[in-house]
Length: 471
Image (tube, rainbow, N blue to C red; front, side, top):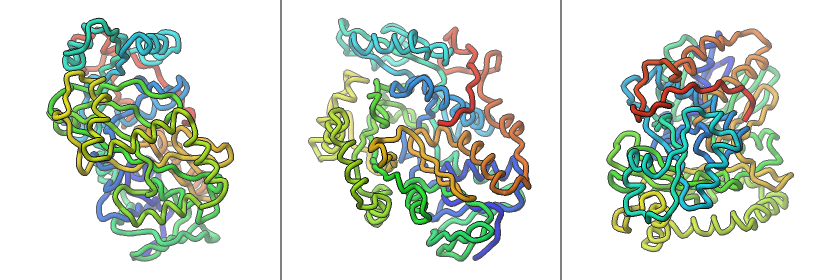
């Protein structure tokens, strides 16, 4: 196998697949290849069992600033519009109520400040502040068995998209394959990438590829490849493995708890599985692991490549893990994996969402959970809250922890503009057609839309447009 392409994309998860779809369908680039090391597309973190199946808008994620929520919002609307357009039978997604729950006087006050004072109610007009009675109508189990004297409030919206990101990834690839000049290679592992006078030569287990421009969208491995090419020397990774607990038929939609503002990890939440609403998932946990892929010991050496074993990396880890909030959080999450002890320690997090749950009602989900690469800046010795993009000479490296899947199409749109610059302006991007196929299908006021809560008078309230600022 060998070939010469204008563009080669490395990585067949949702990040690489969304870029393949965008460039293949909405540009006139002559030849594009996608290379995936696994035998199937979306086999690792994009598989629906390996992530929280959440489409993050920024409305109920309480560790987001208003600025970040504004940025993420457009990305989520692009993907939601794509799903509305291409998945009318909801085989790849479902739409349900979602809320962030405040329990107790302090948390209720924080939600009210966020909604009224911080401007989240204005940014998300469908978002409502609701009390105990309305919470009980939407999620009876959240109120049942809870002390009547405990203050309770939630910020709720009908725009709760639950997504099978693996199926969505596959749909991107299927649509891209309908275009001329597109090749997809699975079971093809990259061995080396070498700069040339005209672009790059990519040596793989199945042959050589030459290209004018390349995008590496291989999750944690993106930084590994970047470092081999001399990029990203000021970054290392803090790999975090997420896991879930399962219960039977407790929630109708998604219920978040308040998140710690200093942490990039998702707060513990409960939601009904995208394909089986009788299964309720609680999580994720967040355990530090020295691997780049869950359950693959072979990626320990890959982690060491990314870590670098240098003083800057060690000092950065020490600075981050000595934080009085992060350190206890990390230690608690290590306990959740311990048989017998772990479920007992995790149970209070579940009971904060559903008070009546008992220990026998939950079980550790086998085969669920992936590794998310949290990015560490060794110059500031701190966690970067969000995605990282390294732009080199005719090459882009994308490292996409949460909310990378939610903003995959926005990221693809930005990368497409950069790629056209790499290719000397020889090609064009029809961004109007891209938006027509995606965000223009996101439900707006007056649309014939069936919301989760059909009686909600605010369900059809307008969503304000979001700017295209970088995350």
